[in-house]
Length: 617
Image (cartoon, rainbow, N blue to C red; front, side, top):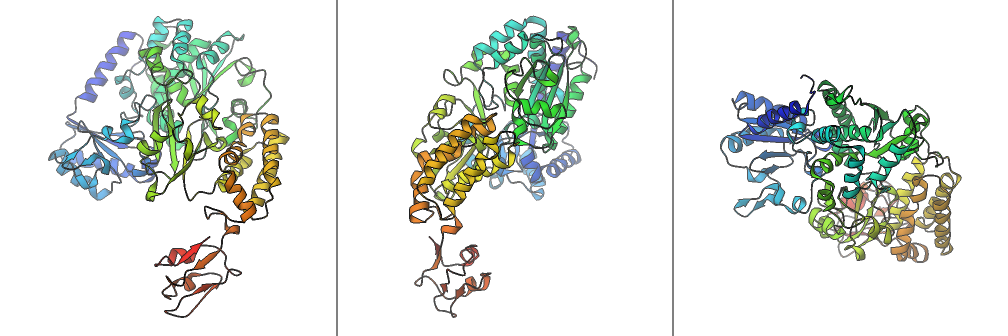
């Protein structure tokens, strides 16, 4: 590929790439994201290519390895276009049949399709299912559509048009105005207005400035940024280059965790391709503007998601937060003015500039414009990625997009905002998901993790789980965070082991308040949220643990006892044979009993019992 020096050359390449993509009668899109790759999708992709070539279909059928489609639990996933058929949980033996019967014969194989697309005698396009129809894919618009390792696919879908528009027709102030109109706020968790952050960095004094991207996504169960980098890396490169133009920077850094090998690979390829076309590097589009990007790999420290800790890590120092002010806009990376946004924030900026700030502002309420990508996990039928307009209710996410709770169980709570987010009870399921509404109920939008819990979840245990994570990930710099959270955990351990006192509830709240007010960075300031929110909405569970010495959800082992119901026990002896402690006794065909003093509460007996005779309470 030769370098693009003019807008006309960029438009010409776009038309050629677009014609090439549209020149096929059919497309087979197969997910190459982390989730499907772990299920074997790459081997399926290779087999698809082999068979398409072998059957002489290469001129008519394109096989494209894409990014994430969103329904991660159903992988490997394959979509055929233009008919929009969605195949899930594919196996190698399915490939030839799909090609012969569907691609060649025109008859989709119903039993291999995503079940929600099969409606009586007809087959819906996957976009018409509740999971997709309730979403608005803005950030994820190219994920599952293009080959992320092919820059021409990105250009065919208006890629780098925003960069050309910015460099050739817009001033920095005009770009900032569009961002202000859009209402875009940072999607990394803090929700700070993007245009103000860019404006402050632009106004900062300094001959050298930097543009950084935070791709250090450390929340348990969160993979929003990873999926964008895997499926649409050029959107981030384009936005960072625009940011460099606005703030007066010639160098960008993407801080991405090394635990994301596919994202790193696709970013590396994308940077090389952009340089080759002259869209990164010297004299971009013949404008005299220089900007380049380098990758820096993180070692997986959660605290390096904090902006000053991230910058210290890029510098080769220990990743720990520093006191602010000065803020990074004035003194950041290498002590120079630095702009930092996360992957999701950058990814929508090219669309805002090509379509206008008002277009983006049509989504979401005042103060929370745009869309937000969430990673759905926990006790939900459709685990995966979902992008919704801000202000969409939690009910819509759980019942429509998420498909409800497995096994017919009841929705109990949702924890939003990652390990430092608050738990939202079922009584507040109609809460709009946006900054102000979530703050009012004691939670946060955060970076986008959303963990769903059912009736069998112990809320005291959940608070303990997330606290254990933040303790492990604390850098230890602040006394309040380093020691205070350990004291919180000790109290929770005391309660779940059956030794709690009612005074412990007051101690939890008092200690949490001190940690929030005294910690240096957001890790410590928000870490008590799971404890405080569960105390607020599920105080009765804490009281049950303390007063009744019972765990209502049957989770906390120290408070459980296992019993055999005599009228259900058939005396099959399976339970006694698997009990590692020899706590179960009885004769064949007669009811057995459990010696609670010997019982380890391991649950092996319940798993083996075929008659539902063993209960825990």
